[in-house]
Length: 145
Image (cartoon, rainbow, N blue to C red; front, side):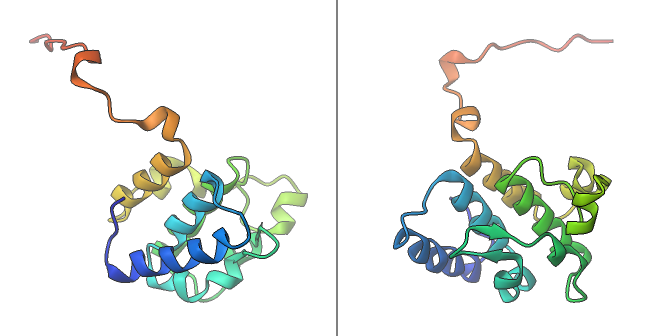
């Protein structure tokens, strides 16, 4: 696994140790924890975003004043990895079925955390993101125009 810095790694390991004591170590938890561990803001407000003991995300955390444009991307990516159908910016939006366009890949991935978001995707979907062995790849020459 690739980490952006030592704080990312340490926070991830701390939370995974906490979860392993509760028997919660599947790819849903692991990808959510990894992603929320990426930036300082989401680490500082982790408990406002995710309740480990209940295994619940707080959609209203998107609306909090401490969110930055970058931490919003991290939070949205983490929530989407947790439950791919979560594309709402608040509990009220969920009730009203008001889907946010801010969860689109073009919105989330356009930041310096994109390589770490991809790492989160690989954690969440290991069966689809394994590195392909070279003998399984087809070499196609691009056509010249």
